[in-house]
Length: 409
Image (tube, rainbow, N blue to C red; front, side, top):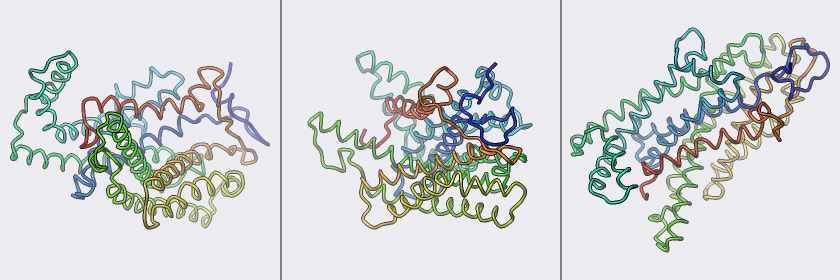
């Protein structure tokens, strides 16, 4: 019988017969996806909680995008499980006796909270759309009108006083949502940091490092997607021969991008500082297993850690963002590099932590499945990862059919 992990694990030197890289690409994708959720919500809360008015449009977009990301967040775990139908037990029987079981509680709480905040933010739009489509003709308009009437929940009062009360509720929900979002992702770092048998994962800084890098990745993906959405709107306007001034046709509003990039740089500096602090602390204390850990960090995974993660994924985009005269093209390249850097951080933690044997005298290499040979290599390979990363955009596209993502729509 084939053992899980046997297909993609290459062993070197002295490795136990039952040792394989069990946590493969989908476990890399899982903290990446939950991190994107947390980061997108934190970005939306900068406006609602801290009253950063310059982020109003980005806040609305990132709030809806965070919900699309949230719907896809559990999928990597379901892909990874050999018995995926049992994965729903986490949601059906939530409790706090294990970190992964707590995911069910946190996930449902967070999903309800984000849905409630979206409802309060978009309530005026729901009511106005329901009233506008009440007597509209056509099946599509009737269906939309029914959806908006249902989502209005009978709360048709959109007077200034009612909207002002909505604003207060939104601020409270956003304030509660920030720690919940951080907990949603922080527990992923908690799971790794609490594994005593693995020297690379065992550090109290792991949850904090995961949270900060999550905020960085969420902001970067929201900015990148926001630019793409506005560019698509501009192209649609051109195609419909309704060429409008740039700011009215959905052209990229660079002021919003520049302002958001400042917050992104702020969180990047904190995230990189924490990661280097952890690295220096490990070298200074040189605790048990440090000898083999050092060979992994400074020799075998040097390219992944110091070139791809810190060099290409952190240093270069940081310089690109802080240089004066930020352009759309430079912002796009920097954001893509940041996402690569955060992905490599997850990769180096998950795969790097399994790359040395418990004998402390052997290594394991993860040969990532590119062309799927069976369902197992599809799930844990490149195609499976691309499937997962495409899901939030599909959900966002569906949501965009009933909720405008930008003010121009």
